[in-house]
Image (cartoon, rainbow, N blue to C red):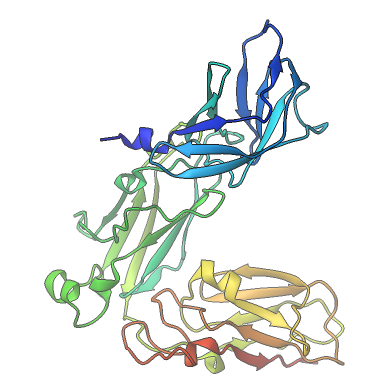
Length: 358
């Protein structure tokens, strides 16, 4: 059986057509990846002729990755042999680069830039009261984190200090964003849905009216292998479960005056999923194009600041995509634990015109 570390190692089998003609080496060879993981450099090789052709990378677990040799640029180390992987290398993962015919096995790692000790930036949503059927929470870090066994460093405690076991859904994979700075914590939906076996057997993870403490322990490691600077805790109280579909008509919208840059405030009247809201709530013009400006998400509200003054000549619309969800997984087309959604219903966005004040 391969260890977890071995499964993430990759053997990069480089084949050149024709093979490079090498002169005698005087310096130790080195393989490096840039910070974004999309360029691989092999330095200290005196390559006088390199052919063209795809380079195939074989993963230790049998997967394959394509590399392409490319021309060096001014940003690359002088004299480096440069490859571009089809997909960026994972932060913190260890690789070994094998160059066929050269007898070289070079360690390779994508390193993350480091500006100080890593810490938890926030746990979202940040509301002090969350619904009893909260489906997701998000842990954000100020620098990239390492993958692997992160859930053993995250604990949920009740008001009496007892740890709640099996509160999170074990998918066998970790739900990171592309930058590895945001981790999604998914509570077991089977324990949240009424009437299904996990709910009737184990009960819901939260009890209404109780206080809970979510802890990210300082032994969690960043992408560079260092532990967090300190543990982080979020205290919250559990309110009634939210089992209603999202009603966009019930949202409170401010009325900014025309010819101003005053922000538009959207009050949701419930806790929305903060990560999804940034991708599913927008302002559009009559032609369907996005309105230029910036959004700030605050869980139960969002604020839009326009790049140009509001115009009285055009009516913008609040656009809510069909896959927008609140923190309990409810959508505009139906509640999360009620099987009333249809594909047709969930394909339709919701539009609401924006009114201006004086």
